[in-house]
Image 1 (cartoon, rainbow, N blue to C red):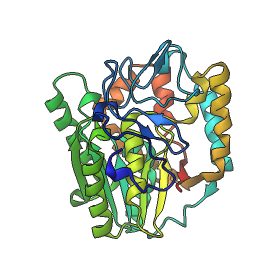
Image 2 (cartoon, rainbow, N blue to C red):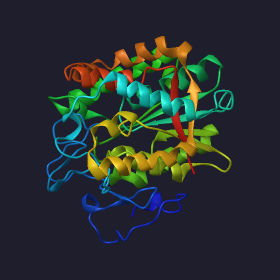
Image 3 (cartoon, one colour):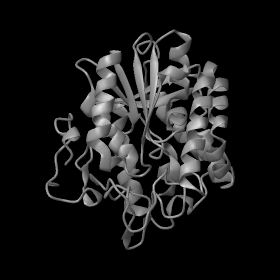
Image 4 (cartoon, rainbow, N blue to C red):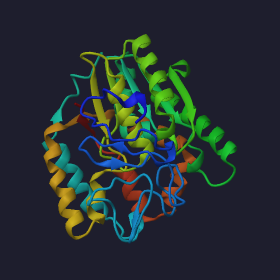
Length: 324
């Protein structure tokens, strides 16, 4: 295991010594294992292309946790989610989560985005709220996101960085509070030590009291790596808030049989669920999301499923899980 993960709270350490980086396995927060690098021909990005972030019959795709609740069958696009069902589940989670809106005011925060647009999807409202209350916020984009746009990788990376700057401006984050680490999309797990050193230095230099990172049970390898980086870099008495992107309420509607029951068993996670009121910041969040046009058009092309997915991030609350 990369040295950057050693000592992370609640993270078991698998036997990876002597194993090539591309074959190394990261330990999940519950002991599950995650592949940090591409395998079986899977590409990086956020799991939006065919074969990314899904489990085919008889074949595991890199970036998916080796757990029974992984997406099965035909992957994320197998059956269309309905907005009504998704809204019911989101409402249930929001109603049961503890409201921490006031608790988070005034605490300097660092938002870790595995790819440009994750920060808006999961945290756009709280970012805008903190800016409104003059609370210092920084956004660190860990990878260049080049695999999220079809075509030339270099041009795609440059495009997504431009979109990130426009999105941050829509939320009120100043340009000098944006940090682009530009690690290869889909390969963050191969650069854990370097990424962790950079983030740890930022946390100490800026006096960060809160880190927002992807949910520890996410199944995209870059999201899992970002979670481990956050755990490693927490200062004493600092707080970690995990935001779900791909492991959202809608995923339960796509699982079958034992996989669905295993996912529902994760309802015990509700004890860690918190919510933040963001209704008055939805307009800013929508503008920020619209800035990521290269990503939005891909979801729009998916029809009802894509609209339901994006709509799940535009409610009056943002949901998080309090970290260890």
